[in-house]
Length: 92
Image (tube, rainbow, N blue to C red; front, top):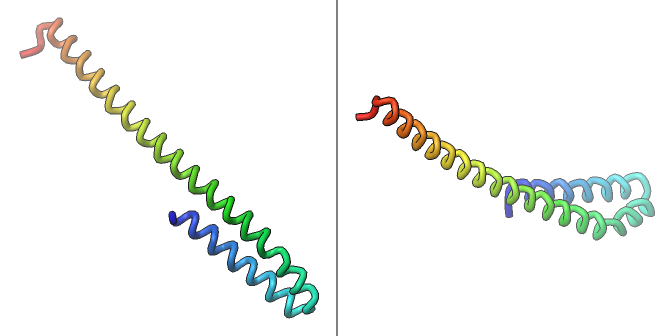
């Protein structure tokens, strides 16, 4: 489990606990109604964690693609630089 996904789940769990406990402190019926929504909130935070994880994978793929493009451009740049220096007679 990645750090961002773990953070989202931790935040969701503590938000649920805080909401239910504050509902129980104010009025026990309110706490019971709040506890009915626990599965809904957990499902929503689980799907949010999945979305965060998929964005991390997409970001990693784009970074790798960018690195490949950078390497290819450097190789291409060197080939043209060496070809230009041979044309000018600067090469050894």
